[in-house]
Figure 1: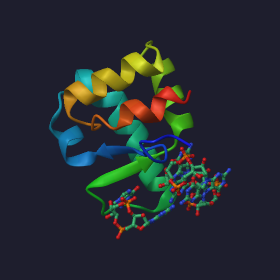
Figure 2 (figure 1 turned 90 degrees about the vertical axis):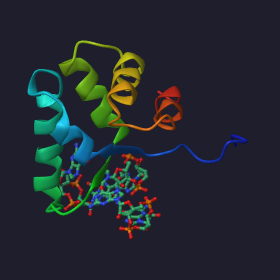
Figure 3 (figure 1 turned 135 degrees about the vertical axis):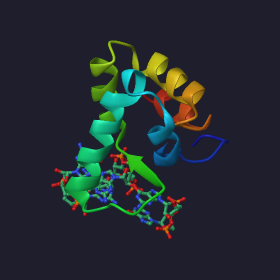
Figure 4 (figure 1 turned 180 degrees about the horizontal axis):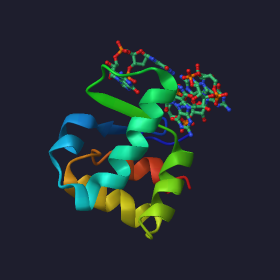
Length: 89
Ligand code: C2E
Ligand code: C2E
Ligand code: C2E
């Protein structure tokens, strides 16, 4: 087991996401809205997503999962802990 503990979750900051320009974050915002709708989970400030969903989003953004994770950390949508969640890919 990792000395840093279990693999952290990928947690999207929905308030930060809503502040970003649509040209950058539109695809992610639509993806997150779809997951919220599938779960019936509308009232959260954050949304935990599947690792599998980050892979799909990387395809949509034409980046590797690692590159996309760095971008989302830069935007303030994921926290730095998310790096460890994609290391296990
Ligand atoms: P599903 O994948 O057949 O999952 C059915 C139910 O199992 C989910 O209902 C949820 O109660 C539970 N479940 C499945 N995987 C997990 C998990 O990793 N963690 C937790 N806590 N529960 C899990 P729910 O939430 O109402 O979702 C309904 C359907 O919406 C899911 O059916 C799936 O098709 C879709 N969905 C929901 N959230 C996501 C997501 O984050 N990513 C993707 N790709 N699909 C999702
Ligand atoms: P946590 O995973 O650290 O989440 C902390 C809080 O962040 C949650 O408090 C909730 O307010 C928010 N949060 C995280 N992910 C989501 C999300 O996808 N949607 C929404 N609407 N809010 C989210 P909460 O709900 O009181 O849960 C407290 C703790 O209970 C969680 O801490 C986690 O340890 C556990 N828990 C709650 N739901 C689940 C679940 O579906 N699966 C698992 N494994 N644990 C859960
Ligand atoms: P979590 O609920 O703490 O689940 C952690 C991991 O346990 C998931 O990572 C997944 O690998 C496994 N897991 C939990 N429940 C199920 C299940 O019903 N079926 C399967 N096949 N695996 C399950 P993952 O997929 O990366 O998801 C990360 C977090 O995203 C989950 O943490 C949960 O907070 C959220 N999530 C993912 N899918 C769903 C969903 O369908 N509904 C809801 N409400 N939350 C979900």
